[in-house]
Amino acid sequence: MTLSRAQLMVTLTAFRDLATPILNAVAETGGPNADDPERPEKTPENNAAIFGELLQNVGDLARQVTNQLGFDETSRYDGLRWEVSKTMAQLVASYFRATAMPMPAARAEELLPIMQSAAPMVPEIMGVTTPQPPTEIMLPQVRAINHMIPVLSAIARFAFGRPEAEVMAEISAKLLDKNHELVNSLLPDDITPKERVQFEDGILEALGKIYAESHYAEMDRLLDMPPDERAKYVQGYNNKPPMEPVWQAFDLRVGMLMALINSINVPDGANMDLPEDERAGGGSTSGGQKLAPKMGMR
Image 1 (cartoon, rainbow, N blue to C red):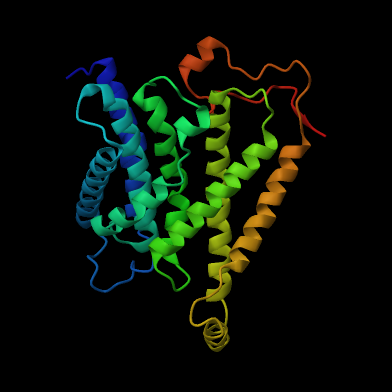
Image 2: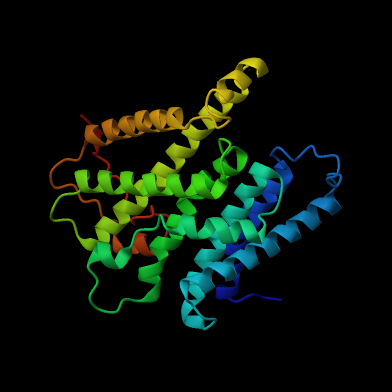
C-alpha cells in the first residue's frame, strides 16, 4: 500500500519522536529496579510487552495533559496534541530509565501540574490583548514541561529523602526565578515579544539540563561515600541530605554559562535569520535561527 505524503510524515515522526525514545529506554532497562528478581526476564517478547505498556502510558498521559490544557478532540488542535504526545514519550522513556517502571497515573497527576507551573505565562509575558491561535499560546507551556523532564528523572532516581512532589515544586520555582533573572539581565529593551519567548524557552531548557547534572553529581557523591560515613552524614541532617551542594554546583555551572554568553561576539550587521526557503525546510534550532558564519569569541 502506497502512503500519502501526510501519512509518510506522520509515520516518520511517530517512529522518531514516539517509538524511538521508548525503544531505547526498554533496551537499556536502567534504573534501580532493573535487577528486581520479580521483573520479567529480558526477552524480545517481554520487551515488546513492556514497549506496548509504555506506549499506552504515553497515550494516557497525553490525553490527561491535553484535557488539563482545555483542548477538545477537534482537528484544529491536532498539532498541539502531537506536541504533547512527543513530550510525554520523552517523559515516559526518561522515567522508565530512572526507575525501570512505567509512570503511574497517580504520580503523573501529582507531578505534571508542578512541571507545567514552570511554563512561561505567555499572555502576561507577551502582553497579549487580542485572541491568539491556541498553539501559539500553549506550545511554550508544552515545551516547558519537556524542559523539566531531566529534573523529574533526577528526582525519580534520588529525592534527597523528601517527597518527590515537594522537591519538584521547589526546583521548578527556583528554575523559573532563575530563568526570569537571566532573561531580564540579558535581553535588550527593543526585543520583540516573540524573540523574548524564544529566548526564555531556550534558557529554561538549558537550566533544566544544568540542574539535572548538578543533582546527579551530588547523588553520586553521596552514594560513593563509605556506608558508615554516609549514614553519619545523613543523620546529621535528620535523614534528609541537604540540597545546598546541588544548588552550589548549579550556580557554578550557570556562572560558566553566563561567562560563555558574555564572550560571544556578534559582528555588527550580522544576519541571524535563516533564508525563507531554509526556514521552511526544517533543521533549524528551536528559535528558527543559526549562528552566523563569522561569529567568534572575544
